[in-house]
Length: 105
Image (cartoon, rainbow, N blue to C red; front, side, top):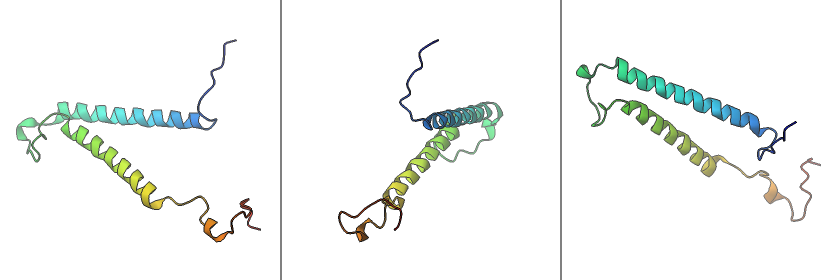
């Protein structure tokens, strides 16, 4: 038969790639639907402009996607900076050279 390609991903990472692609496809579909609704359904004659660029078609879609990404990146930054802990929080209590097997005995 044909050659099988070796994956640089681990055995469990392929499902993560599929999930990431599905999330990206759903996000792209949602953004496309929002842009189509903005062009087709928005009444531009009675639009009350709040921001200088709010009357540009698709502005709120791009604005929402940008700040959604900023919210995700900001929360990841806060998580790495403040919330992540060492793998073994009791390592400072063990004497140097002690067994780190983790069985608790």
